[in-house]
Image (cartoon, rainbow, N blue to C red):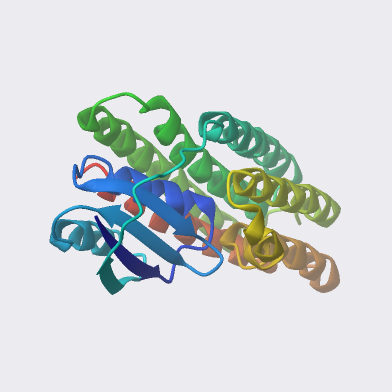
Length: 264
């Protein structure tokens, strides 16, 4: 048995963990994957050479780099029996907030909330692919990933077009109070999701949860929408909302391309 450690600099929330799991699924030499999200490390227990594993990790463009490979006598790995239940929980929370933020974004005329709702939907896709493909073939996973990726890109492009229309038009100012309140609840929801997912980890990592939560892209986006709401009120301008919306749409498209890589 060999143990290979990878540093993955862009692995800052559990959605990247699921992407990596799906990418490495099907490599028969892999026995177990151990993720350390706070420290951005992945330990792969496997037999044989690391070439195929390393190639797959690098193809995700998550800043992966092999640190070391060594032999190990460890052969006992405990699988988390609650993994499926945890994935259903975070999927439900993310999809619920996709609906909430999309609805309130349209009502309050906030592109920041609409964009953040698509980011929630992107995470839902990742968890959904993991769930619905459990026990299925690799071909099935790839087909689902392709559909999810293209659908996500289409929604983001529609969002970009709407941003341009509002930028050059005379759209009414977004409701800054709705932006702030809904984003605060979304921030709490993201924190709950991260906590739920970490329940499957060792209690020794409990002290790392706080630092992990505040380095998550999702949490940063939530803060961005809150700041944009404050600037909309202060400047009496819709530009801050359009700027944060554009930034998040770009992140959504980047996430879509990551999902599409799984379909290759």
